[in-house]
Length: 177
Image (cartoon, rainbow, N blue to C red):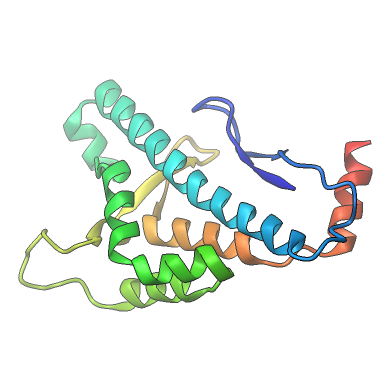
């Protein structure tokens, strides 16, 4: 089984093996247990990435100054605390995701993103940060790669519940040799 790994804040995200199953999951319940580990790992990765993005964004604000950073599209959102609120707010969807790999959490995020932003100018919308662009890297022309947080989170959840085929496993094994 492989998970996401990022050695340092500047390193690229890579797949890294964290568990080798030698018996082809022959015992009852082993496949489900491996799937749950994969889902839990995605959740942990989201929390880790939120901290890294908070740190990288703060460093950019410090390096550029607040005015220039905002002009380039950066925002300091405190993603680490936002993620905690997110898990509480979507607790029933997260419970289903953790226990069955349900895609209800992805649908809930998509539904939230499709709902128009409140026009009353209030910034107290719970999980409103999901609509805000976050720094996920740099483009080749050295501009910031900014994507709405909700899209990043839902893509990680979607990838974690996508079935892995035997052909993909064989290809990865051949690649590692």
